[in-house]
Length: 331
Length: 295
Image 1 (cartoon, rainbow over the protein chains, first blue to last red):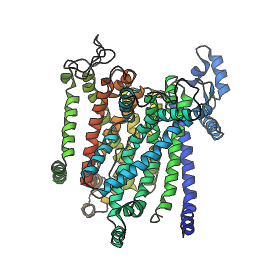
Image 2 (cartoon, rainbow over the protein chains, first blue to last red):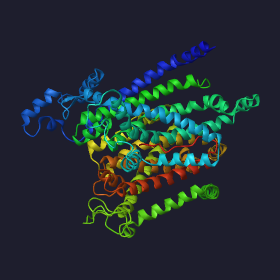
Image 3 (tube, helix red, strand yellow):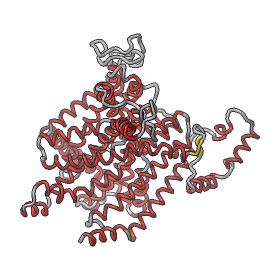
Image 4 (cartoon, rainbow over the protein chains, first blue to last red):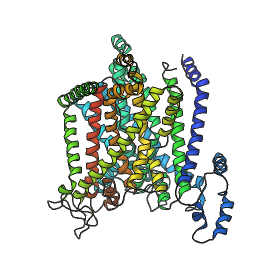
């Protein structure tokens, strides 16, 4: 039984549709890279001035142009850009004196450490609260949960972060206010882990609140839709307990749209992470982005835009692929 | 005559909509009042604000009191006056962006649905493409490359916010153009443009207005976030720029952070509750809509 179910699941995943989706996603990524290239070229200012610095005459400028291929036609430059991106070369960061890829790689783990736990906590908490508030539709509890969800949805990430920082850290002194680890350094093993977790709690909590409302409200609405269906009445008549009915029979079908929302919200989550990292002085990609703006480090900025866009495209691809496998009604 | 008819149906639709909102939903009623207060404040900010929000003084870090309702900041500027003037820049910016992007969305959606075929395909692929780059990052990068003037930011955001509207309007037009009243208009010899402008779009109007309202809330949040990062018009006081400044002094003056945040939350909450109520009146069976939360 279990084997045949999983076999069906995988047979729905692969096939013509999948190949088409992969091709579409690759084309989309190509277009994003081209878009990025033209964004650089539309920007005001001659890159030569930037490369040559203050000094230099026309002869020197021409030399620089030839060296960096800036005298080539636009399409040739586009081709050079595309092939270097394909090789994994995103350019050179002048402010860090390193390749953009290594600058970004050095920061990416800190941001992932923040984002991944927040996704898990927000989705499990959101689904739980959504189911419970659907169970008590229109009760006081339902209304209170919904109002708080809307409130969380109406505050920008940085306001939530600042308010949490103010009350839980500065007033009550429960958590450290800034950074990823204590400045004193040299902690090892368990004490390092607790130090890290206490620094992560507030930024992570902020990101949970940012995502919670959307997941909760969708889970509630989907549950209400599913609970109207005949098979639920049948299960209830058969004598299935209410909790089992909600969490096993109904949730299975209600979860499908919720999964897509969790997947497609990556862009919002990354933007939220930038703001939260700013508030808590957390050394991740968000801080890198702000430093790049201050230092006018365009290669880093544009690479971050490109990478987040590609991330969203891939997340959309994954949700689109998983969706029909979860829901046999969709072809 | 035809025009009068259209306004007639619009009127009954709108009045019934608002009557339902008003009688059934206390929260929606409060939200309308809150929105009204913010609009009034934005329009008459010069008369309400007791001080010039940008004028510095020697009264730095004053606690909230009767003289300084929301306290003063590190340069002795009155926070209450800042919040009052901030409502103006927030609402003005977001209404501009919402109307401009709404117009683009209606044009794209209606054209796609009405033309069909290749045009539809191309426009919908374009919509999918524009949806991909996260708005916040795009706005950040473009502002860093091209500059942060009011006009630039309005243009950039208008060109990223139209996608949801385009999809909604396309779906509406597709379903409306199969209705009998369109057939009747065609039989009477009305041109395609006339049918689209005077018969189909007025019926899609409630959906369009609800979507514009959702966009306003989302743009307010996005603009505040950009300003919090330090990207915005430096000559204009706004909630985001007040918070940008206030975060450095959060230990010395909680009021510099709390009051602009509350103003933001209250305005966006009112907009969200109201569009939620409108939407559930329009389509009671469908899923709730969300303001695309950009940040």
